[in-house]
Amino acid sequence: MPFVRRRLGLGIFAAAVLASAAVVIPTVALASSGGEHTDSVPACSNTNTYVWFALAPSVAAGSTSYPIEFTNVGKSTCYLYGYPGVQATTSAGKTVGPAASRVTASHTTVELKAGQTASASLTITVAGNIPGCGSTQADGLQVYPPNETRNQFVTSFTFTACKSKVYLHVGPVESGIGVPQP
Image (cartoon, rainbow, N blue to C red; front, side, top):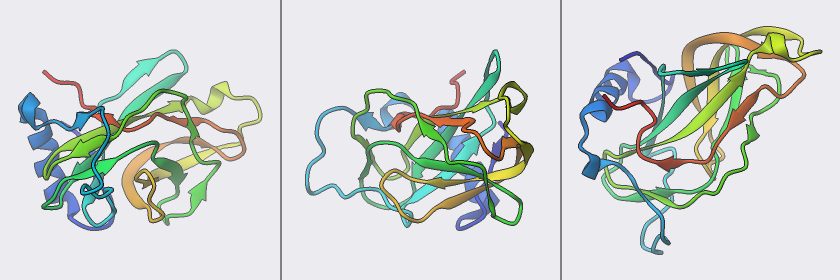
């Protein structure tokens, strides 16, 4: 299964292991959602959350959606709630165009035990379909896990971006991996 690694942290080997494991993880190992999280469960942070991007697109007229995956690489359960921040970048890490808009959808707290993965959907509108877009090349993404102020980079993902119009749209984090199951 193809995937894109982030530039910081665990590296491509760990991402490959996580991506492979995500496909064969039994249903019981997927993130749980719903209900309230307890005060004893901390929010997931950049120190225990690995962001990766599966090249498992869902194509619709004029746009393509991809799952952004969030894996708990810590030793304890943590939770995610809400929307990740997403913006396109150049290969040098400079941002390209506006940040992703949020797709209005209901969302719940997602608890991730160690090794579990949750996902959010990122939809990229075809730049050529947006008048006045000012298209340019993007070489990756910077992703802020929900409620985090530090980003993680997803590199080696080239696509046409818009300099001046919103063309990225992100949904809330949901339970389970976003990679289609066989």
